[in-house]
Image (tube, rainbow, N blue to C red; front, side, top):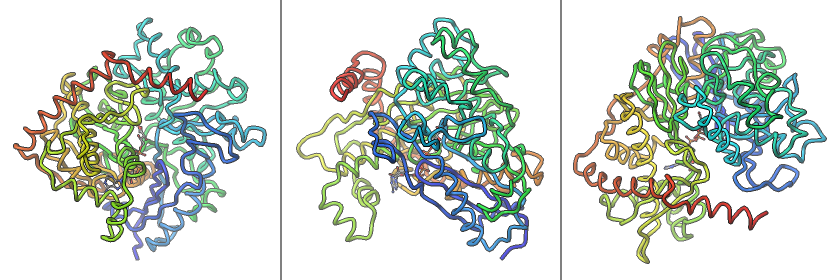
Length: 551
Ligand SMILES: Nc1ncnc2c1ncn2[C@@H]1O[C@H](COP(=O)(O)OP(=O)(O)O)[C@@H](O)[C@H]1O
Ligand SMILES: O=C(CO)[C@H](O)[C@H](O)COP(=O)(O)O
């Protein structure tokens, strides 16, 4: 039992939300609770059975409110913390996860007439069906030499706000017309908590092309599609809230959901990856944090503004005030390992894992750990969920080269682990090539528990890996921002010094293995450019063939 002031951080992930109660003075994590989303990810059909095309990924906004109703009170209970001790609540969300609402924040999918309309739902970050729109956004921006394009590594992703909104306009104009606000879920949840719609500076910058106080111009939008000209003014623009600022006070309704006191500070929304940097005490230039879970986000602050090819974006103060905040990422990492287990694990392996009391991941990891580098004779491309950085193309797909009749499941599993490490090395190389130095690599997220994977990343990147000393990095980061918003710390750096947690240099590279990986990485790079840079466009052609076959 503690009587010290506390804050609550709520992390809205891909499949569940996690609430964490944190002591303000030292970041001690007192209680945590998780609540899975009832509808998880809608990628096959809507709740009423309406079928979805390939590459769609939707969510149901009421699932987020259930997290507030269940996980927050449960975490408080587990922490043994009384509501009077809690001075603020902060949230972080996946992004770009975005929904169409009425002017009062009502999601369009909650209107009875739209329950069977896919475009009325939340488009999850990994909704990858707007690649055509992203391609046109990029081509037109390049042709017109739009200044903002360089801040996004030369290409914006189909995952971002404008691509998803243009897809909505072009595929369901009626829903587009009824959309009064196009809202990041990160801001929608804050709106539900405090009754005020404040657009957070992080998603506006990284996912909404908001740079130097402006969005892409009306002129440019009209050239994309005349009906899109008013998108920013009519549906998107909203006062921007700085990270770690107060968005408002907890309403009576939200107090009843959460068990917290009405009137406490509600922090401006933020993104799961970005809040994790201060949670891992990474507040100095060049400290890159890779948040490895379903996907990986690489976030880093720097005093230099560079043109990093294929990055997701660079935003002034996008992570920490006073520094350029960079984001890059891999859209599929844990998701790829999960896909292999779902589709490629023989029954006898599943039985042996169960008999040993291991998860299939743990079992395959143990088998894979017995191999020497290169022993499986395989190299893979990690594009099963497309490529976010550095190619920014979600129509790319996975590849595995070198299979024989002797190839075993653990060989493929290891090759997939390695492929994701090569993807991260490609990203680090792009930063260094743009003279934005990466001084240190710190890993956070659910995949830190896989020691083989961590060692592969240390060997492949030839860097000592630090590891965040919290199993709840994003929720801790959200709680820290709440502490700042509630006035407990002057800024997020001060909060990071007191509440952030990291173990430095936990996994060290082994020179012999690193040299062996250099040879495999060279093969990865060849395949990467061959399939990803236009030498062989087979992946795009296959998508077209699939689209025709399923039309
Ligand atoms: N031991 C493991 N080794 C590798 N991947 C794992 C392991 N356990 C779970 N995963 C993968 O980790 C991902 C979940 O990561 P997590 O950080 O918990 O979630 P999220 O990214 O949604 O916050 C899933 O894609 C799952 O397949
Ligand atoms: O792009 C993002 C942040 O900018 C997404 O939020 C992220 O990729 C999804 O995160 P997770 O893998 O933890 O569910």
